[in-house]
Structure formats: structure tokens, C-alpha cells
Length: 295
Ligand SMILES: [Zn+2]
Image (cartoon, rainbow, N blue to C red; front, side, top):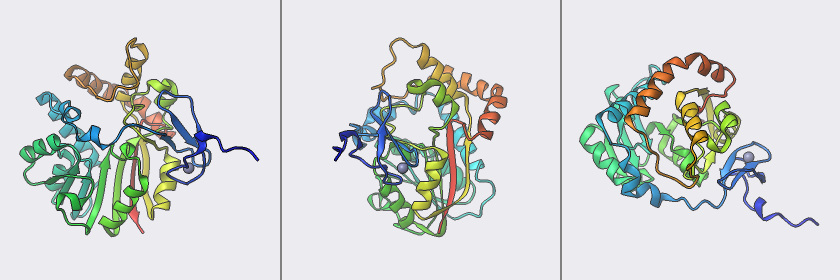
């Protein structure tokens, strides 16, 4: 009889198989079956995202606000032409993506844990219904009847994946869709930079790859419409910056983005397109993007 290793005590949040600890600064565990990676015993919880300090980086200049709008437009553009309906965004921050949906004729609701982010969103986007909370209920939104649930760089922060699937199933109409974006653990930039990959951070609790995402959505009652990865300059520039930094600290949770690095990354996003296209062909881009339909 072999004693159960303490490190195996927690099972994979995607497929319930056991995990094996991997060498990293964040106490990460990799599933032996689906290869999903998750943070074990993380001290990060919603208090961080509710704190005023965590939101303060979001609005430092007009250039950054414009960048947020551009990113939101790109994300919504990816959907292509879709008939208008009702959309709920989780982790909506200041509401730029939800506002883009309103501009396309949708009725939009946005949830975020950050009170400061929602307050800014109310000013910027009066046509979006924004509220603080983790469920529509908490914000006084309709509990169900949504045609689309979207979450951009949100699910990787959530410890309880079952709660996310339940939220998606409960809020969406039959045939409704879920649209997610999150870091791709299988990306080349992650393999090159390892711990110094910019999406490796204390507040990331889940690291999906295309395969584990497909497994999780299937188990959650969703049929995949599109699943792809997108390459970007941020993953390479951020990784290089961390790689050469002498005072880089794995515990740091406050993302910092200055105007200068924003314009540099914008230029490199264009210049690096040929490299990113190759990454994407191998499902190795830094960002995992998925659209799936509720069965
Ligand atoms: Zn698994």
C-alpha cells in the first residue's frame, strides 16, 4: 500500500484525475490525464480583485483607455456577424467589450468584482448595465435568458471551475453560446520563458491548453464552435523583460502597463505577425480563444 502523496491530494478541476506537481514558482500541479495545470493552495481570492488598488492601473491615461477600446473591438470583431441578443460579460472591468456589443445592437450586462472599475464603466458606457458581483443575482440582473456569456481573461482567476460551468448553463438559453479568452499554457512563449512567461502570475489559478479547454467545455455541456490560439507581442516582450529583470518577483500581483510599452507592443504586434501566424498554425499562440454552444 503506497501512501497517497500530499501533493496529489487535490484532483484536476477539469477531469478529476490526479495531478503531479511541476517545477514552478507558484506551486502548480499538472493533471496526469488532460494536462490541465492549476495552482494548488493559492492564497489569492476575490479580496484582491475587489480592492481599489487592483483596479487603479486600468485608467492611467487616455492612451491606455484607447488601447482598451481597441482590444475590445478586436475581441468582438472575432465573433463575426451574429444576430443581436442579450449578452452577459463576467469580469467586464470598465465595460468596453460590453459597450461594443451594445454598438452592434445587443442588450448588454456586465459584472465585475471591482467597484472602482464598475464606477468608471458607468460613466464611460451609460448604455451598458453594469454591476458588482460574481453572479447576475448579486447585481440585480436577470438570472437567465442570455444568448451569449463572455469572459476575457477571467476564468484563469477562478478557483472553482464547476461554479463557472454552472453559471454558464444556468444563465444561457438553450443554444446560447459561451465566448472565452485566456492564456494558452501550450504556447511557445510559455515553453520558452517558463516561469518568466508574463501570464505566469500569482493571481492565475487555472492554465488551460486547447485540449483541456475542449475537455472542460464538453464535460460542462457545451459543443465547441471555434477553438483557436492567437499569438501576440506581449507574451514575447513581457517574457524578455522578465528574463532580463534582476528584481522580478513571482509574488507580485499588480499588473503595470505604461504608455510607452503599450505603443511598443502595438508596433511589435504588427511587425511580428509572420511569427504569430506560425504559432497559431500549431495552436501555440499565447492566447486561447473559444466559442461554444450550450447543448
Ligand atoms: Zn485533468
